[in-house]
Length: 309
Image (cartoon, rainbow, N blue to C red; front, side):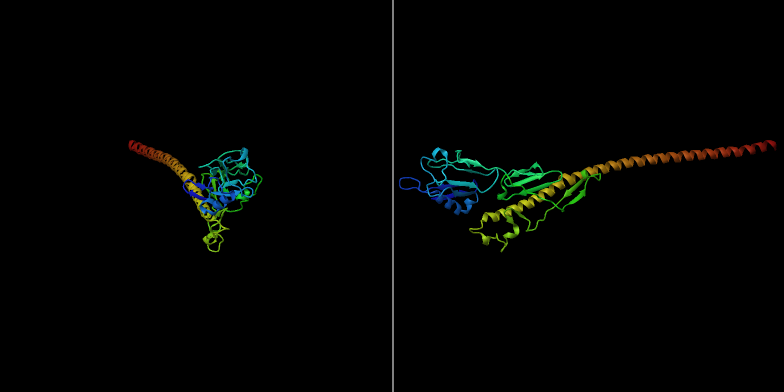
């Protein structure tokens, strides 16, 4: 009995042992031990056996009525990942036997997972696997849940206290023109996720390469790095989106508003200048008229004296 896997397509091929007559001799326990011993396989699926696993995995007749007998040693395959994009599919390359879903009655060769259902502040969050994301006018958060939290009855209270800053980006000082930004810590004690934190990968941290063995899977170490990268990428994407879609948009809008105000001020200044120019011209005309009248008035006595003389 042997097993081979293809990392690109995530295909796992199991070749069962047979006797001289072609009858399958591999038991469920044999297949479980084989799959779980291969690190490249157990990253994709977890294998277990119902009952004692001592009976053969398959025979020519298949399962009676498509029902798994708890004592029959049926082989159980479970996806290591969570979410609607995770699935387990069994294709029989040689021979015949039936596979059933979780209800042990529905005969099918493929079973897909489902994303976790989460409500945050009464709103249904967008979910992918065990991660829930919500974006509202006052909250932008992403939460990753542990495997133990994947039950319908679990509830949790999360309180956000302090942190972040409020920036005035609009034309008017009002809540609609303000933006709150909170940047979480990105040190090694915070980077990571449900699989662990980045600092644990160091020597003595509990999840270094030296700790990989029966009690510590190498897949958890890779998951920690992936979760840390995802957290940093999410933070960079969030800040980039704020800069591109909010700050730069408001800068452009404020630039247009400043241009309009400058143009209006220029028109007002031009109007005031024209008014003052007209007033100055009027004053000059009145002054010249007054001087002319005085000149004429001074000439009249001279003319009278010349007549008398």
